[in-house]
Structures are given as C-alpha cells and as structure tokens.
Length: 514
Ligand SMILES: NC(=O)c1ccc[n+]([C@@H]2O[C@H](COP(=O)([O-])OP(=O)(O)OC[C@H]3O[C@@H](n4cnc5c(N)ncnc54)[C@H](O)[C@@H]3O)[C@@H](O)[C@H]2O)c1
Ligand SMILES: N[C@@H](CCC=O)C(=O)O
Image (cartoon, rainbow, N blue to C red; front, side):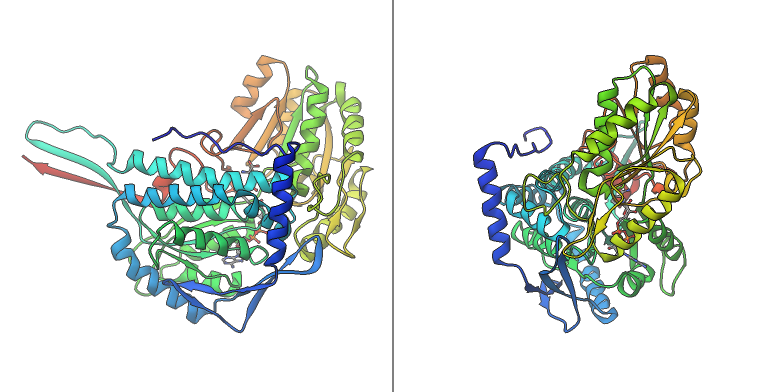
C-alpha cells in the first residue's frame, strides 16, 4: 500500500485546471433544484416536509430540496442501524478500509464537481472549496490506513503459560452531527471514522448544506458500503437532533458545531434513558476565538499576511479563523497599517468568479449576527477597514478590522464566526500570551516571532490544541496537524490524528491460559 500523503491542492492558474473547474460549475448548475430523499437502510424515502438548500451568494437560487426526517423516520433509521450493526461489526476491518479507499478514488475522479458544489451550496471560493474536498479525500485515505494499523489491537505482555490480547471492538450506533462550514470534509471525516471502526451511523448534516452530504452517501454506496451502515437523516437540530441524542440505543455522538449546541448535546447524552445500558460517549468539536500573537522581533509582512489570510479565508467562517490579533506595542502601528492595506485590497464577490478571494457568509441568520457584532465593535474599537454589508442579492459582509480594542471587549471574547478581526496592543510578549489565553476557548493560535526563547515560551504556555509558529492559524492537514481544541473548543478529539479512531471503539482484553 502506498504510504499516506495529503491530497495536493489545485493550481488554478494552470489553464487546464481553471477550465476543468468552470466545466464542473456548469455540471453542478445543470442539476440545481433537484429533490433528494432520506436514505434509511438503503431505502430512498421522500417526505413532504423539505429542507431547502439555497446558494448564499444568490439567495433565491435553490441548490436542492432535501427530504426532512421526522421523529418516526429517525426511529426507523435507528432500527436499520441497529440491525445492520450485527453484520457490519463482523466485516473484516481491512474490507471496511477498502470501502474508504474506493470512495476516495471515486471522489478524486469527481474532485472539481464536489468542489463546485461547495462553491454553490456553501459559498466557498475555489481554493477554499478545493481544500475542503482535498481534506475529505485525506480523511478517507488516512482513516483507512489507521484502521489497518490498529485492526489487530495493540501488543500487551504475556507471562509463561498465558496468552494476553488487547483488541479494539466497535461501540455500536453513532450519531454524526456535522456543521456547514466544512460541509464535505468534516461531514465525511466524522462519518467514515465511525464506519471504518465497525459502527453504524445516522448522519444528520447541517441544514444549510445537505446536498453535498447526500452526494457523499451515494459515493459510499458506490464504494460498496452495505445498506443500513450509514443512514441519511437530515432534519431539525432541535427535533431530530434531540431525539437521536436521547435515544437509548445511541452509543456515541460525534458532534462538530457551536459551543452551545455541543454543551446541550453533552448534557442530554449524560442522561440515562429507559432501556439504556451504557454511558454514551460524546466527541464534541466546538467553537474558537483564535489569536495570532505578533512579537517585536518578527517578520512583520508575514505577520500581516498571516492575520489577513487567517481572518478572512472563507469569510472567517472557520473554527480556526484568526478573530483576534495581539501585537506587541513596538511594532503595533506598522502591523495594523499593513493589515488594513491588505484587507482593503481583498476582492469580495460571487465565489463562482475565481478572482474573488472572499464571498458570502452562510445565511441570513449569520449575516444578522455578524452585522450586529460589527455594530458592537464600532463602540469597542477603531474601525479601520470594512464595516459594511449587503444582503440584497447574497449575504456579503466586507472584511472588517477593529484596532485598539480592549482585551475584555465582546469582539475580543465572543465567537463571531464571520469576517471580523479585533486587534489589541500588548506591552510585551508575556502580556500578549496572557491576552491570547484570556478566553474560554482553546482551539488554534499562532505566534509570529524570530525569538527562539519566546517560541519555546509559547509552546509551553499558549494553551490551544493547534499552535502554529510563523504562519497563519488555519489550514490543518489530516495526518500532519491533527486538529482539535481545549476548554470550550471541545473534547480535544484530534480529527486526522493517530488516536482519533480509538474514540469510536472500546478495548477488550482477553487472557487465555495455555
Ligand atoms: N472544532 C472544530 O473542529 C469545528 C469545526 C467546524 C466548525 N466548528 C464550529 O461550528 C460552529 C459553526 O457551525 P454550525 O453553525 O453548523 O454549528 P451549530 O452548532 O449551529 O450546528 C452544528 C450541527 O448541529 C445541529 N444541531 C443544532 N441544534 C441541535 C440539537 N439541539 N441537537 C442536535 N443537533 C443540533 C445542526 O443542525 C448542525 O448539523 C462554529 O461555532 C465553529 O467554530 C468547530
Ligand atoms: N480544520 C480547519 C478548521 C475546521 C473548522 O472550521 C482548519 O484547520 O482551518
């Protein structure tokens, strides 16, 4: 088997790649507005009630109409998953891994089509969509190989006359609840981690991006996944989400999303329901308030570039996005001025146009929330770039920078999840790290410095799950920078890491006397 290497990103300055993406956008255009059913035990079920997925850049354009699961259908899916678990858990892990490898190959052949769908459904500019699809492929390739690595368990000691083994077995039925901001990579990664380890899954994708999830389930079917191993049940978080989380047959929940929903799921999952004979496991990857710290001995151009790219890539809608920058006073004005210049030069518009660096935010609720925060920011700091928004055609918010913000301001503390960055001044590096840590989150962070002592200080004291030196704070690669955060950023379940699959399994010790 070829050793794992991450999927390369596409160079769209190459004419052939550019043309292939335009063709893929045309292909996606040709199937906009279709209906998509639920998939339960392999059966397609169409409901009256629909989730309508819209293009955030052209808000009346329908991407697809997706059937919506009720509690009754969620229960039917639970029964299908329960029945299929009896057989799927016994399938050779190497065969389960093969399904992932085959799915990766199918997606690789249709790579630009998937990315183009993300451009239309999630408002992802080309490079961001391409990275999302590449990460989905990476999860398939990486988790497949990880399963092969742990399929025979781990070695343990045996004494004379004794044979001890330590094996991993599946947990049971997993509920996978995924977010819209990495609607392909995170949805696919969390689903296949649960499947390859022998569990069966009910997938509830985010309601703004269900079409790409449906297309992925089709790929898994084509790759040989048996009916009922994964069940596609889009629906309301409050209705279907709660029902599935509470269900006594649910063995674990793999959630990625906001802090508040994650805490709610964690709390509900801790309640013992009638007929339940286990403690549910919760994998929760939640929000962030991520900081780039700039030291006085630093490459200041790199600092400004890193802040702008990390703050405004995909309109700041990444849990890893730089939403705060803390700059040591000696270099503060220089870096702020350059951040403003770079921000003002960004192109914003419909993501189907390759020349646009930034596009929309996801929907009206996000637009309203972000613009409210911009108003709050105007009272908390000095608006130095952006600050305007327009939702007449799509949900466009200009990249916005607030300087001279107090460390305790709301825009410095609360996750905005949009193209807004707050900048504050620190008197020295120690104070900068103290400010960076002064948040309930702990997901990503970056330090820009040429001072080795300060890098080592940050390595020890900057309390985040993913810490980057002399680069931006977004863009973790599967198998290279396992991803997950501390504190209110979640359970630090490192997606794309060497111990992620074990979270979906339980270890069994057998000891035989010889
Ligand atoms: N740490 C990470 O790896 C990571 C990755 C991506 C996104 N995020 C976070 O996700 C958030 C953005 O995503 P979002 O807006 O989709 O988050 P969200 O919490 O609103 O929704 C996430 C998912 O939970 C579902 N949901 C909502 N209410 C539910 C309930 N009561 N029970 C069960 N499910 C419910 C939603 O339908 C969706 O599928 C941000 O906070 C971001 O930081 C974190
Ligand atoms: N893994 C992604 C962020 C995922 C959350 O939105 C990154 O590293 O930028």
